[in-house]
Image 1 (cartoon, rainbow, N blue to C red):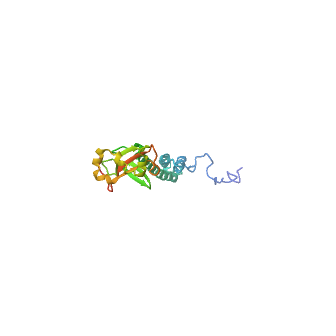
Image 2 (image 1 turned 90 degrees about the vertical axis):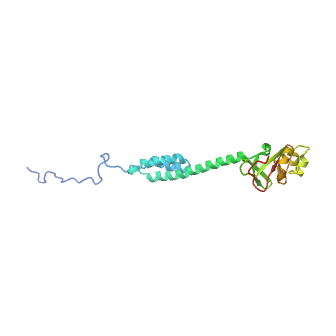
Image 3 (image 1 turned 180 degrees about the vertical axis):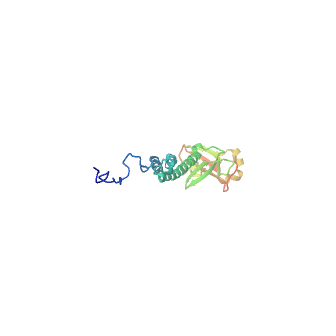
Length: 212
């Protein structure tokens, strides 16, 4: 006897409205690339070189939409480049600062014939070593130690006392610069025994050759 309802008593089964079941091979949404995230984070926390490198890696890993996070990688690269420039700038400033500090001539280290540039800060005089064949402010022409015997003279006429410090031979070479002779100690306002007196010539115009 034939089935009055046809071959399928329940009719045609409806298709799954939710698509294929899990594990049946449908395309899962792309995940956010961890390397791109790391690039952004490291660039933000001042690890610019590492963040920059990871940014380029993340850019490659997110190519073609295989992973999300391309924008994070690009941002990481930009921030990494900016951070790297800051690092380079700080490095250059540090090197320049060290070079400036090392160029300072302390009164106890001053030598006759040494050419210097002068930085005046009120009563404080900073001497920085310079090349004698290049433009410079001054040249050291005499050095002496402050003792009990000369303390009073140094205190009363510091530059005038240089006439007793500079050798006769060097004085003959300084004929045109005698009015430009100046002097300094560790603390010109409080000269003490044991301080170092430095006599130097600082004319109004720059020097570009040694005097002595």
